Length: 412
Image (tube, rainbow, N blue to C red; front, side, top):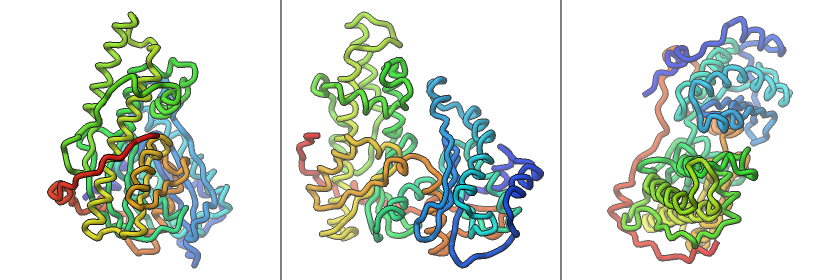
């Protein structure tokens, strides 16, 4: 369990005068209740300050976001104290913009939902502290949100998806496969044993110095790899996907990163260039690492589908695989997963790219889902305690089943 309010106050506590001034810009009456459910969602788990207002029918009434990508590209990665300061500077403006765009007065809100884990502690603290001040002033319920649960449930905002469904969450900080049986009911089938795929792709992009590439200078690492890979030939490098012999649904990306590092070092010697300069083979390396990553993710997901169908955890005829998280916006990886779902008679669903990356909409929608289900709605914020994302780990059962995955031709 995590005690929230004490943690939040260590990091950032906006002054009561500042919050009062913010609220005076709206006409509101503390404690007012409305029949129509409307939730304000606040997201500050990493490097995006985001807020949105969503109603119970899934209408996005207003949203706003401030991205820190440009700042962090210059520093070569996210520096937590810098991210924290940028959240502090922007959170009031972003929440105000979302509320103004929605035309909703704070008094009309049913609850305030906020990401409280996982993520960068300093960043999370900013959003949490601001939210708790609002909750206290408005006398509204508070709904603490698990970031990955929000990613998993986003598809129910954009598509009519019933429980249960299989979800693959792939991002810069996470990689997991889970069966979603309810709003807060997850069976964990597999996860990354080391780093996340987005983190690995970012590190490869930095090692290739892609911020110096004229076509990639303003792109995040993962986007730069995807863009450059279109110009490359993956067959120039023969890289085996990780964990070929492990008959489970876990992932590993650190070994792949080390293999790519060695390839880059060798090519630098061959081309006679120093670290930090652009290799002539950069596009081929990008294509190879993207293809290997896609094949690894696809195979583990294929096994998860077969396991769930074998145990009657998913429908035999109309099973759904949902793919979400920042890396889910990579179209090459999506196409690899389409090959798997076509072979297993499943439907592949992905939220729109803008909802795959961190955003306030998914937090507000998760708040709506919890509000409707009556789960995790807190009326008292003193000594708040929050249970982590409810999940039962059955990854050992998956490994014990030792399902052999048929080889699929990955012609992407």
